[in-house]
Image 1: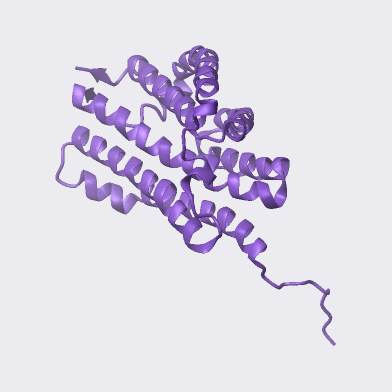
Image 2 (image 1 turned 90 degrees about the vertical axis):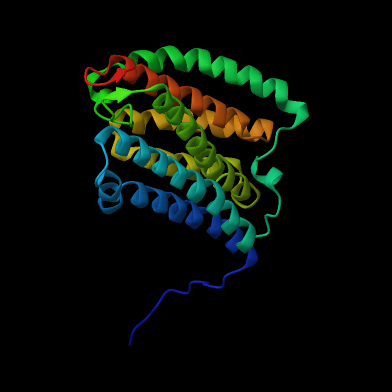
Length: 246
């Protein structure tokens, strides 16, 4: 005779409101990752195109995919399948009461992060992956696409991680369990980029989660993440031995 433990598998509304943000985060980030890393898609960009032009186009494609899968699809899934029904409830807002505090923290964190990122971005192991546009010669257009691509991508990224994956879970799990899940998934997404970024994502994720909750807005997370990414990208551009800005 086969025996089973007595487990309640009934799926309540509260369960759904916790289940969807976590699974949606996995599906949306996974969609971005496998589409942006697809060799078939990448080869289609490089087919019959100059390498520099193809590299720029593929970079922009990847960042736009990130914006739509993580920033838009995740919100659509959340609104469609849970009780969440307003952008403000997941931090997509700029509250007047915390706006000055948000700007202050952006300045403080940027002042700390920029020097650290500047020196680490020059290291050979960082130059293996950055800048992500691998064109040998960068034009002004390339530079603008690099900036715009990172900005759009990181808006989508923060909507997913500090919005969809954080705010809806607080009500049911409490602050610290929700933050723990957030940090774990956020850090895990950095594993392919190496040990340094994976470990660095833990304290950064903690700080961004706390400040996002205290201000009720994604402003700090988005702006600080953009500052980090552009500092890293532009520093790597300057120091990469095989890439030049025209």
